[in-house]
Length: 346
Image (cartoon, rainbow, N blue to C red):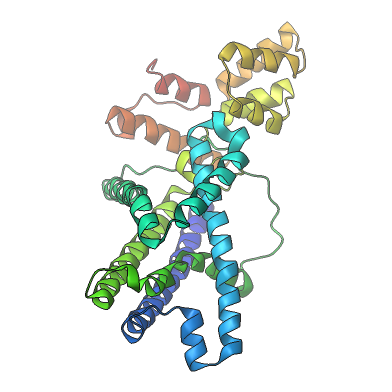
């Protein structure tokens, strides 16, 4: 019950912060919509600041935007590569090379011009929007039908809380969330690339973009809170790697370095190669140790509130896969039983 109260309280706080960010997005959108009509030839923060405040404020705005866009590209590319390597773990060792290659590719395409780069990136952009909106639709359908479970089988990252939920921490979360607003100015800068009437079309595009952005931001925040995904160093929430209770039980028994094990799994290979690595990098238990461990595994169940939540989430996943309610599943109490259920042996 205490864990449930904490989760609900955290979700409410996150939704309030997300709502404030969306309100700010609306204010910025209205401001730039007016700028679009006032500067039909293109007007971003630098031009507007120079005309209304002078050269020094304009240079500060330009320097801030330059830093902002550099960070936007690096963070966006890194996030995208993290999603790809989460879905295809064999690529994880090459994530830096992939990220640098994508930045280089984007630079080359953008050097061809605004219209040319827009045409090139239109297809992947529409594909992303379609997939994201479809994911949100499925998520909300499962939420309203009661079949939306929680993220399970994830090894939480080790972290030590250094402060409570203070006003500074909330403001920091707000500032981090405001990165979602990055790029709103791009339409105001790129008015000449639109068809006539340019200002009208640019304004409509800006409103649609902000509406979609706000809806996606709130939707992902809401569903993410209900999924209760724990912080982990790898992989991303969109593609959680299934290292669960039984895997950690085995790692502890064989005294394997969890980080080294994770890196070896991500490097890919056959089951035989992974087994050979485990044998070479683990202790050599006796037959009696193995028998005791096996018996402990068969009788091991969730031992705290967090483990109970993951246990119920695994049961919900099995029920969803079978298309039946959880109450109709075979009654189980151990992790081994859950695996038996998942593999249709119970």
